[in-house]
Length: 232
Image (cartoon, rainbow, N blue to C red; front, side):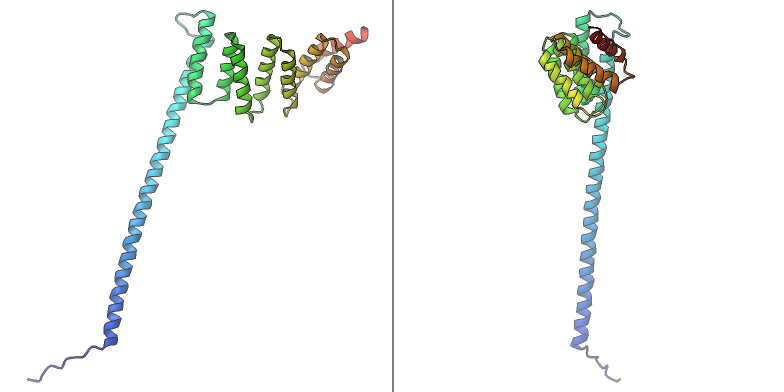
């Protein structure tokens, strides 16, 4: 029987086979690493979705609670649907408490203005002024509401007899962009100057009102003041 001939494997072939096996192992390791990375990214993404969803749900619930408190405050403040109507001061205080609770949950500019009104109704003018000043800074971009807040400030300052402070506040409204309440500012400043005996300066403001804001509901009053001056 012929003897089997053993085929000699060259060193080069062995090296090639070893290299191929090493490459296969490397590819497996890379693949396993990518799988782990993808799983990690998946967990991170899932966690982010859960967190974002939780925040959205929390905000929804918070806003919903704030709206409920605001509605209760509104009903109390205006004495609507109340089984037992409260005395005026007690009603204003209860409404103020509810508005403050609502504002603590949702920082709404409308709520802050209403809180200032409640303070003023309770005769707590200093707290009302502080709240309105806070409003003018916190919600400076609310172009349609800032003049209204400043007008409320000027009214309280006038009620307290602080004419100089009221004039400064009216000047802040005059310096604000847009025409909102500018006719009111001119009328109030003119009246204050008139009270101080500064007739000519007052007349100039009345005239400015009639020229700049002819459609203003205060235009006729200003014309009347100018007519009085001419007659005098």
